[in-house]
Structures are given as C-alpha cells and as structure tokens.
Length: 215
Image 1 (cartoon, rainbow, N blue to C red):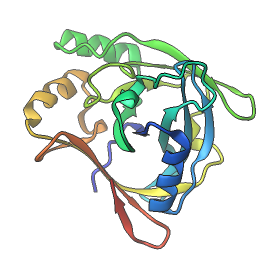
Image 2 (cartoon, helix red, strand yellow):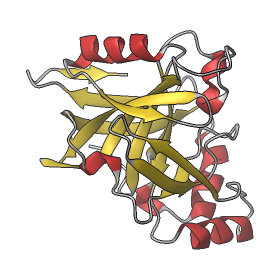
Image 3 (cartoon, one colour):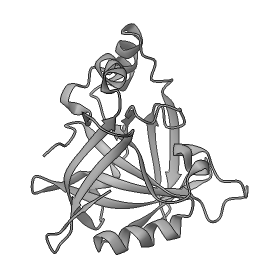
C-alpha cells in the first residue's frame, strides 16, 4: 500500500462538473457531496477517504467549471481547459509549516510558487479559507502545499467515504521529479514515485462491495 503520509486531498478534474460527479458515482458507487464555488470559476464536490480503517481527514476533490460562472470559457485551474474527460490531475499535502516548506524548497533549487489565499462558500453559506501554493502552476506532477489555518479541513465534514488503497506518481524519468520532491523535504509525505510508460497519477480505491477501482 502506497499512501502519502502528508496527503491532504487528491484532485480529479473534468470539463463538466455534473458529468464528473456522475462518472465517479458509476465507477465507485459513491456520490460526491457539493462543496461550493471558487472565485477562479470552478466548483467542486467532495468524498472523504478512509485510510487504514480510519476516516479522513484525507479526501477526494472532484473539480470542474462552475455551472453558474459568468465567463463561458473553461477555467485553467488544474488544466481543466485542456481536458476532454475526467483525469486525476494533482494532489495536496499539508506540511507542518507551509512558509518554512516553501523557503526550504527555494533554498534547495525548486520554487513551488508563492503562498496565496483562496476561499469558497459551502452550499450552506459557510466561508472556508485556506492558503496554498502551486494550484495554478504548470507543475501538476509536484504536490501543492496547503494550510487550512482555522478552517476545519473539509475531509472531516459530513461526507460519503471510500477507502484509499494506493496513490502513486508514474514518470518516464522519475529522477527529474525526485529533485523537486527532495527540495520540498516531504520524504514519505509525498506520493510514491515509480517508473512507467507515461507521466500520470495512479489511484486505487476500494468500493463497498470490495472491488478495487483503478484510475
């Protein structure tokens, strides 16, 4: 079993959020709960993860264009504008100190981007606020860092859940990505890195009937 120790959430993106939610439900038997809309023109739906028999705080974020957005163009967040279907696009980790992690990475030759603030309203109207790096960067192979501050981490909320079996990053040249991961100093907090035929994330979930679904 390969699960990042510092995993916060896994991002599955698509060009149409309702279709993405339906696709995930068909594959897993779990229907994601609406999470809310972002100022970036995206919206999400969430599913909690169980890891080693324990529930959360890890979760899956299904993200796509906000159906109620003003701009008809597809948002660029997580490369949504380039997708023609669902794709495991990224993941977030939660270091103990996000600012220190950024400083360390820069000192070791990798810039994960500035720490910036983002927020969204839940369907119930609650405001969630967090700080993060890299969500709009081109380097989706590298985890982005997140700090929820005083906001309850969404994976601890009242969400349907599914078991996380494994999550790894496949690369044709693992050494190139390993440099960035080493600079971040995450150790086993990041997804496992394996050699493969193409660059992608490999995600395995266990359905309630025991079947394992791979993405």
